Image (cartoon, rainbow, N blue to C red; front, top):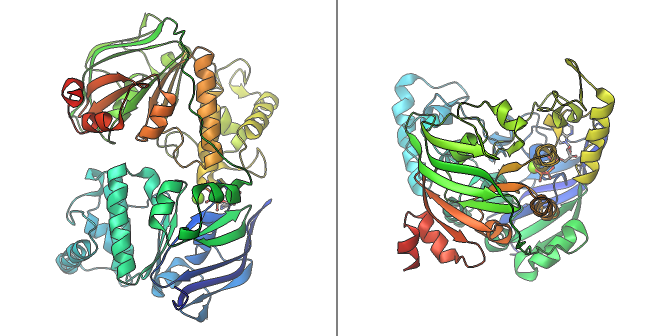
Length: 509
Ligand SMILES: Nc1ncnc2c1ncn2[C@@H]1O[C@H](COP(=O)(O)OP(=O)(O)OP(=O)(O)O)[C@@H](O)[C@H]1O
Ligand SMILES: [Mg+2]
């Protein structure tokens, strides 16, 4: 690849924020026709560097060349004009618009309605050419997260991007969707596109990239050929120590049953049945994992056992107490904590400080409340403790959480929910978006809660994670439980078949 030309070359790029050097004299060279991974811990500066490359942030120092020519971007428009487009960690689509409308939205000169059909044709053609499957006429609200991501990709291809920057694209994808994305990325590479790929999952990084650059504390600590490195060497570069995921010994002693769900059905947001006759129990000191492809009722399941969604039939009890008609506050009072998958919208208030976010659902607690007012001293102390324990990278507790890196924001919510006293902890995608060190820490913390006697419902698409932590694993398909298996004896193949809709008896036979 030594004769490949540089599509982009960044030299000595520095970007500072109040109290942080997000990028510290970073050199990065992206070759034509390569897939280049940016790797690094939460807060290492990956997203910032890409935001500099798309003209969202102006660097404080350093220079950028595109195809050998020095450039200076004042806005994302300048970057796209030179063929650089980015898919962000969080999408920016208009839900009520169609796929094509979203794609043409904001294009120079606007788009006359008459030409919409023309645009639709072009979207269909691009979608065919790159193997990015999506219906150009569908409304965004009808699409899964994976499909929405494809719209973002088509949007930048439509604008003629040759250089694509993908910020943790697989964090929100099912394993099957990730595989499809990789087919698309390889086909782009074949057509001469250059791709920067950000991910925390070392196995996929090893599988997809030509080269890998590791950032640590804002600095480039090495660029390597993928063929000449290993996951172990990479985690060493990232964190300066080796990370080894443990398997946790499953305690023999299970306590009394805490959560009992019997024959529960519930409707989804569009009024369709989302859960059908679901029954299970979780005992004190037990982790019940829920596997399944996203969209098979996981979200609704989490909502009904935390009081955020009403059930249409069946019963739920917590510690023997019937929860029919109970509010989310009643569930919190019963000792139920919830870490939702969408930690942006539901779980935090971006403009508020870390301190305020860390007591967000807990103003009512004596420790933090003084009548309607917040006890700032107690809250501040608590926030400092969370920052310390969860290694949250931030200038301080007064920082607005909106400015935290994606993974550090996750840590704030996990920290808040996981330090509450609870009987039942419901966690969706516990470690998604977290770096290897933080992942290890969160797994340890979950295990610790189990040992302390909490009942845990762990919903995830990551089978490896479910297998390493759970005592039993239930599989959801189309809102029904296909079976519940003992994690120690579970086979990935059997779980896979159940995730595709086979009942346990059929899948094992
Ligand atoms: N707009 C901003 N204002 C203030 N600080 C910011 C802003 N954006 C990023 N930072 C800080 O810059 C540092 C790098 O953040 P960045 O988002 O680039 O990390 P990252 O490597 O993408 O992490 P993650 O894996 O968690 O997404 C962090 O300390 C973050 O808090
Ligand atoms: Mg990021």
